[in-house]
Image (tube, rainbow, N blue to C red; front, top):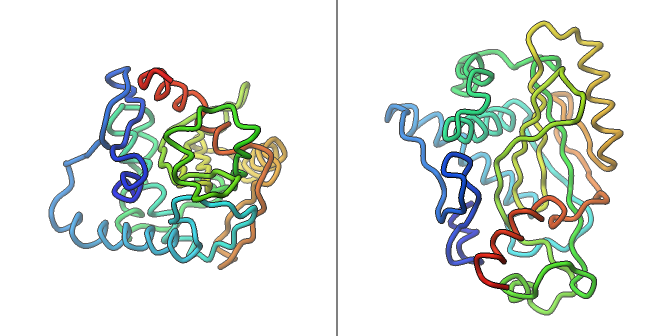
Amino acid sequence: MYDFQKQLERSVTGWNEVAQRMVGGEGKVKDVCADCNNRALSELDAYGKQVLSDSGLLVHNYTRRDLMLRYDYALLLRWLLKVSFNSSRTDGAHRPLFEKYVPFMRGLGPLPSRNQVSVLLYLARPEVLGQSRIAAEPFVRITNGSPLLNPFLVRICYGGIPGEQRYVLRFNIFGPAVFYLLMFEDGIPPGHAASAIRSLTKATPGAVELSAKQKVVHVRAGESSWLDLYEYQVARVQALNGS
């Protein structure tokens, strides 16, 4: 994914929480044995790439306003947790939350229940260039003449809902697709988790919950564009570029 992104930007630039500055390149975590890295985790990454590619997300500019995602819930959740866990180990945030799911990520543990980990999918709408808040370069060159812009950027991060204490919210963003990981506190009753999921879905119009009972989901673009999600990072990049 980062290699694909580099085709657009020549280099990957992002905010590093540890360094507290913009850095080039993606972080790498090298604490996995060769057997796990070359077999179970490599196969998981291959599955993640396949999901993005088969759904049409692995493109330089996603201008559609809907998405049909075919998925195997257990495999997808394993991959999302693995990617987010890697990120958490670079900045130290939330690492303990992931450690109990390491066997599951490796394909050796049970699927977490809905009141342990839940996944929502949101599709960001494209920006209309004539109404955009960003400088034209370096993004406009990837539109290929389209008035719409929705570039393939990768961001793994976390956030929160004011007053919400029942879960930690992690984001895995791949182009316009935003996967929300709700990682619930231990002992949260199923009913409370269901209520939290409903509240987040209501607060994020267009978001849909993924489930092991489904193999395909149809998502329509919500109110927020990719720029709404990346606004602060884009502002940092433009400040560095003097634009």
